[in-house]
Structure formats: structure tokens, C-alpha cells
Length: 455
Image (tube, rainbow, N blue to C red; front, side):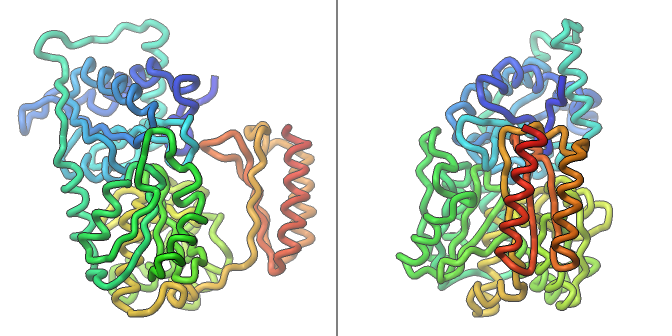
């Protein structure tokens, strides 16, 4: 039996892989692990508390009910914050002094999927060891292992915490270095968790906001909109003659952008712009930015030219965050748009990232295209090869030989990266080269080998 937790919580097709029974059982297990040593807080005389939020997927309604039932049955008081972004749940977990937080979302995945993500006290992502403990307790319960169930006054109580929306928006606006008055900004919220939060935050910060992808019906999340589908953002930026556009994904933990011409500004470029800005402001600790091995080589070259150091990690914002904590760094992120500003957030926050990017445009009075031009992207091709056995990537001799041959062809002017997705049944093939045609040809050839070797 495989590990339940992937790189970003537990995900799967709702009501098939991720059932109400699984959600309830995991919540009970999480309560025992994350709040098991604090059945009564001696400093305030109350039971453990959990913040629970979700994105607007239809399946989130029954999964939330299961999670809340599991937590309350384990003696945890629940604060239901409703539909809010993942970083909002992380923020509120910390600001409210909760024992832990739970977010129901599959982020950028299509609507049939859903997921459960837990945050430790303070709003921090769980270490692998804690996830393993939760999974172990869950499996013990599933096998019939009895546990001490509270009764009577010992069961948890459930409260609707409606103040979370305003508290989170106030936090976002309050940490900006300057206002963004005068900027016309298109905000695409992917019919997701930030559909109310993001437009409100940009408006309070002073922007003239054109909001799209802001009408969630439980079925349309990430459907042709948001950070995974930028055409709608580009069209709206051009149609409204906006200064820039911001797109987040379904749970709003990542952000991509478009300049006034509609050209995409990816996570590497956003990270470069914010890195330079923070270095100038003296808030970039150790003059270092943390990125992943997926970052474009042009990003590393640009940062070195600007006097910044780059530390690289494995792919996944949890690994970026771990390196930031270990090294005491303040800025990190991924090409996909996960950007972590550790002074203001414990996880990637798409709305905050977009606001900080807009604040830099406003402060410098320079268009986003000019700011993003600090780095030149080398041609990079990414192919997602689906329906293959991602677990055998490291063991396939045929694949290893193909990668070695590709690296020989590219020489020192490019690189190859193959990795199994941590959240979907696919293998990602990334090839970077000085020439776009060569990058496409090499990536296509490697994708064919992946299919034949792992299919």
C-alpha cells in the first residue's frame, strides 16, 4: 500500500480516492498527533482548536463535513472559516493561536479532484515525520485499534468564524511597502478560493480592479482560467488596457502575471523582480533567493549579475520552505508561481505575491515588462507524460541511457530534468537549451522514451 501523503497533502478524485470515510479518519488521526499532547492548554484552560477552510469545489462541502465531524469527535474545537485561500488558513491558524489547521483543496488540479492539507501550530507545513505519524495512526484506527473517545462535555464544539475574511485581507494590505493607487489591474481568481479575497485586497490597496474568473459554482474551478490557463488573463489585460494582470490558482497559493502587452511573467521572473526589490530595501536576508532545480538558467544568471546568491532545492514549495528555514532566508519560490515571502507568510501566497509585484511597479513607475526584463529566459520545454508508472523513473536503465545521450547532445548549453509528479499520475520531462528547436526535439524524444519504458 502506497503512502497516502504526497508532496502537498493527500489528494485524489473526490468520492473515489478521497472519500468521506478517509477524510474523517485522517482528521481523527491528525487530531491525535497534532493536538494529542495538549488536551488542555494549561495557559488558557481550553481544548485544542483547529481552523478548517476549503476551496469552492462541490466535493469540498461533504469533505468539510467529514473533517469537522472527525475533529470534533476527537475533542477538538473547530473554527470553520469557509471558502478562503490555503495561505489564509495558514495565516489564521497562526494569528488565532490554533493548534493546527486543515485546508480542503486540490489547488490547481481539475474539479473532480480534491485534497486535504494539514498545517501545524503557527500555520506551518507538516514535516514528513508528522505526516507519517498521522498516516500510521489512521491505519491503526482503520484496522480496528481502539482509541479513547471523548464523551459528554469532552467532544469538540464547532463555530463559524466569519471574521477570517477581513482579518486576512487586512493582513495582506498591511504588509505592503507602498500603495498601488493608479494602477489598473486584471485579477483572475480561477473561480476558486480567492474569488472574493483577491479583488478586495487589490481594491483596498488602491488599484482599479477588473475581476475575472470570480464566479465559482462548485464545478468551474481552474476551468480555462487562473494561473494554469492564462489566455483569459491576457485577453482581459489587452481589452481593458490594464497595466498588468495577476492570475492565481484554485487555492491561491501560486501566482503568475501578464504585462500590459499580455506577455506572460512566470514565477522565475516574479521571484527575480521581488528579489531585486527586497535587496534594495534591505529585507533580503543573506542576499539570497531560494529556487528549485526547475528554475530557468536565465534566472540564476540574472541573480548573479544583480549580486544575489541562489540556493536550489528539489521541486516542491515544501523543500523551498525547508531550505529557507534552515538557512534563515526570506524569499524563495518556484517557476510555477509558488512564491514564499517568509516575513509575511508561512507558505506560498498568490494574492500577496501579486500585490507585492504591483507595489514594485507602483514604486518604480516602471512597466512590469521592463522590471521582468532583469532576466532573459532560455528556451525551456516541459512535457507532462501521463499514464505511466512514475515510481519507476529512478530504476529504468532505458530511461537513464536516454537522459545521458540527451545531456551529451546539449553539452554545457542546456540541461535535462526528469521527475515524477508528486500530485498527479505523470512524469515531467524538462529540457533547457540555447536553441528552442533543439529543446523541443530533445524533450519530445525523451517523452517517447518515458512512454515506452514506463508505460
